[in-house]
Image 1 (spheres, rainbow, N blue to C red):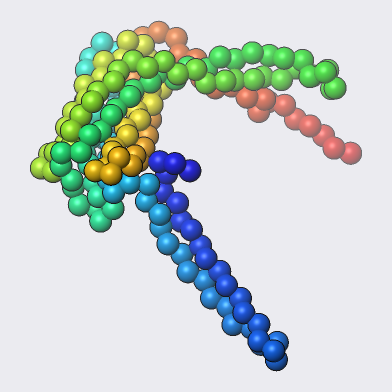
Image 2 (cartoon, rainbow, N blue to C red):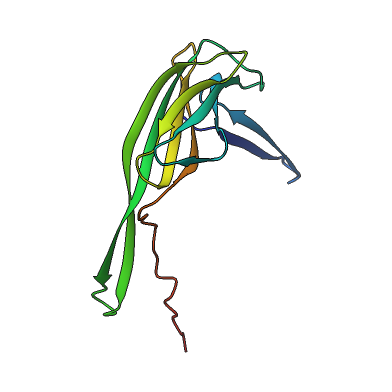
Length: 171
């Protein structure tokens, strides 16, 4: 679970000689780093051939902005490789879609406590893009944030396909 926030729950149950139980539980949130990256796509969508601003901030676990922390941003275009394969046991064809991601932009930024910093992304094809921002605290611990955005424009876009049109009757 490196790079992810986790809630850890501790539970204890004690039984005495007269078989009476005393139980309790406590939870604690474990942060992967002292800083997180906040990510927003200005306008929500982008357009092919036009720069789209991805705004990034550094935020501490207390919710306050933090400046001067490195944040690495990688923007990937996600496409889907779809194949149809015959199931050996049933003889039916199954649709298998696997994501393929291509990095289209990287930005090495420093957070600013006063204003968002910007990574300008110019998508060359329409479709789904994934923005991953990794913030690093002073101790070198990392926390990753991801966000999806769409780039609109002319051209074909491949989407994930599934076997949703398949109906299985059980008698």
